[in-house]
Amino acid sequence: MKRLLCAALAALMPVTALAQDVLVLGEVHDNPAHHETQAARVAQLQPAAIVFEMLTPAQAARVAPDLRDDPEKLGKVLEWEARGWPDFGMYYPIFAAAPQARIYGAGLPRAQARDAMETGIAESFGGDPAAYGLDRPLPEDERAAREAEQMAAHCDALPESALPGMVAIQRLRDAMLARAAVRAVRDTGGPVAVITGNGHARADRGMPRFLRRVAPDLDVHVVGQTEDDRTLPGRFDEVISAPGVDRPDPCAAFSG
Image 1 (cartoon, helix red, strand yellow):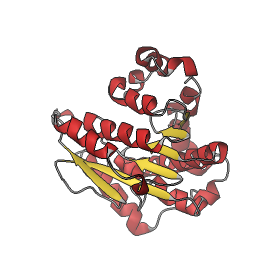
Image 2 (cartoon, rainbow, N blue to C red):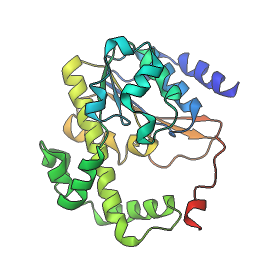
Image 3 (cartoon, rainbow, N blue to C red):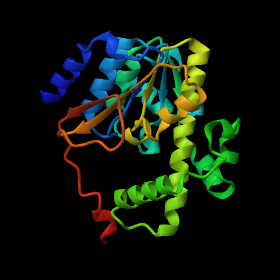
């Protein structure tokens, strides 16, 4: 009931609260209420395009019109859960909310991620990495803060040598999301909705920061979604809370 109420309230939010060009909708991946809110916002905005973190460009190209009204077939064609994402049934209403929207994928293929760890994120990104700042290291204070966050998120169980690579891949994913959003605006004229995790959505260091850098004239509105009114790390234009989800202890896997 609470999740339905959250979605209903989102649907009643004024259109003036939405971005003219890009609406970034963050999430906790396994929270159904967050996806209900995303679907409601997408239905309200009726974007010309939707960018998904969860899809690679190759996967997004498989979204044919005749699949849009068949969630079972669409999920299978996209190999959604095979890539480790939560139940496609939670995400399908986002596709259905704007059936005419073009679908873009900004996900990092596994092979490209492996290459990036070996050759560097600038080389792996392609195009113009300098425009996105990927050719330069992070400021030392930001690098240290990001590495500390990665360590805490993994229950202080990671070797310190793994942290720089994880932070680099996060930057690469953020830049790819921003590039896909810019491309979607260019191709369709916008508006564009972006579906991604809260970490990528945060305006202070995620994909919106890259958008400001490469497309400063775009009107961008960033929504973060938290649970049980907990503080959400980072900066957002708007934060929505929903009931939390029962989950096993994420640190149990590290305590064997």
